[in-house]
Length: 584
Image 1 (tube, rainbow, N blue to C red):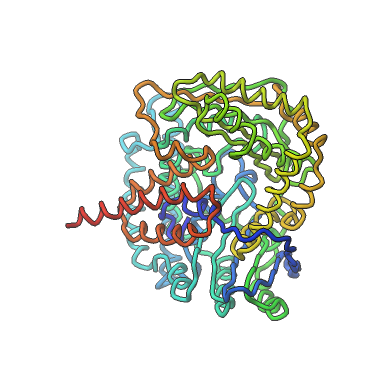
Image 2: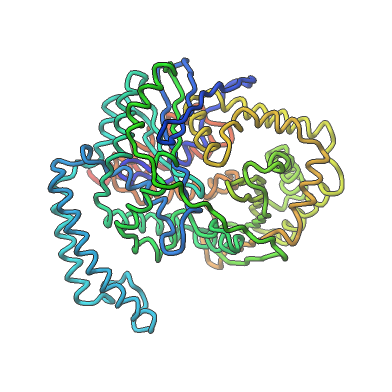
């Protein structure tokens, strides 16, 4: 998300996929790691090609750390951390804090009334807690009083001041993302603005003010509606994910369940922040034009003032039980016919992860077995993809196929299993495996050219368990043998270990956007969502900001992402022109 939480929601994710590639070399990232006395870890890498620094920090907290009742709270913090501090985002901090306190008193009364309404819902007397006609009279009155205080507080707020400060000082790509295992915040700044960054970011962590807390809940609730309820496969994706994860807290969506979001309290948020945003649960990353010897004292001066948390965050202890039989999910949706197959895979640091990674590469891509067999050969699918999603505590091996409209999804599913059985039966030939390894290593090396790309990967890999993977992944891949791949296929890609989703086009549903259907399956959900958000956007300035960000990444994006970015840019331009025409 961007600073105000209302820019198109998936731009950040698309930018991450579009991180630039460069010439294939064999660099090693000479990262300097150190830990401050308060427990905050730091990863520094000097890269002097341009006078900029990719700067960020990640909190090792995501949806996996939540519990029923507060699902989505990690993602909600991604919004709240842009709301300012005691010095940023306010004209009058005393008035600001007083209004927050008054709002909280009213909210206590509203929670009492909400408990009454929940009991009425349980008894079947009302059908929806969000409908004003179902509210108690006391709740309506308190809601009016609360809205009055919100309007008063807006007079004290300096909207998006953090973003304004960065922009005025040459900062770019201020953004954040939340996943199952982490919440990361990052920006690119001129090298001579590093101290400004250190002050701003340490202030966010030391003196946060969760202003507009309850109105931002509504923003996130609407984001969820836009991302999930209003997309062709959004609700089905959630249901499929919940079917796949039986016991593990990966079961719920990162954005949270719809019924949980409106129940967050300020007290819960403060407790969550104290637990998971303490420095002993954070990793800072700097990549770019600086000298570590000079930078370390600066980092310690600003971030060393953060008080260590009282105790380390509680561990995630729930394990996913071994699956004992195939699960199936059949549905009709307003989408192209699709076959989705997930197998329980391996966590990020597991010794089988490299073999599973290369196994997916044997299957995926334009030269992969699935494309050759199902798209070019049998001509029963339009697109196919295979990949892994290795998370901190568990993993997923994924195959997804877009079925040709006149073909039988069952035939596509059967063809996938034939390819899997071939891998289980016959070792991958040496020449084929070497080509896959060469492509894998070239990709890994190419992504080390951009400081921004390196910074994102360091944050991500550290949160998943080992930042050194940025250096070790090529050699780990090189060590994988055909026997390793065959063993992984036999161990993981079994019938009893899989969950299968078959999505048929709902009768009367409009055909898939022809341009979207040409994109790789992995890109299609993001593009659908981005286009939907673009169509709903009425603020020309936000569209222009999104266009500028994507244009900046498009020129250096991987080839497989360029069609997706080009389509989004085209539709954003068309929407911008339409908004301009409406004003005439």
